[in-house]
Image 1 (cartoon, rainbow, N blue to C red):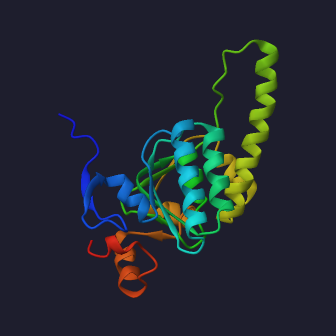
Image 2: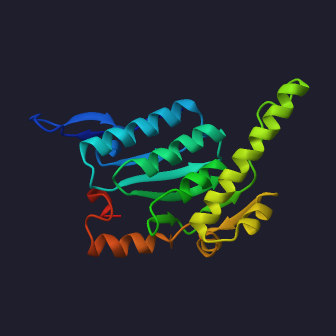
Length: 216
C-alpha cells in the first residue's frame, strides 16, 4: 500500500512542542525544493511561488532545487528558469535520477559553479516539440514559426551557459542525447559530480548545504 507523504516531527518557531508535518513542508522551511515529476502548470506555480517567497523571506541564503524529472511543457519550464534568474538568492540545482528535456534546461539554470549531478544521474537534451500538431493548417503553420523561435532561444541559452558554440548545441538538439554525470560536466551542463563533493563542502562551509544534510 502507498504510504503517502511521510510525516516528521518539526518544532515551529514559537511553539513549545514539535508537531508532525509533511516531510516536504519541513524541507521547504530549510530552503530545499523538489522537482520530482513532469513539468506542468501546477508544479511550476508551486516551485516559482516558493522561490519568490523564500527570496522575500531571506534574499541572501541559497535555495536548493533537487531535480528528478522527465521534462515537460516548454513554457512551464521557461517560467521556472526565468524565476531562478530573477530571485536574489543563488539557486543550487542538483540532479538525481534524471533531468531530461526541459528538466535539463532548469538544471542548467542553476547558479554557475553550483550545478550538481549525482554520480548515477542521467541528463538528456533534445529539441522542443509541439503539443498541437493536430491543429488545422493555418494554426499549425503559425505554431511551427513560434516553435522555431523558442527552439532558437533555448539553444542560445544552452550555448551561453555551457560555453559551447551555437551550432554544436543546435546539432545535438536534433536528436535525443543522453549523458552521464561526467559527460554532462564535460559538456558544461553541471559543475560538480558526485555526493563526495557535497560531503567535502559540508565539512568546510556550513552555508553551502542545509544544516540538516550534514549527517549524510
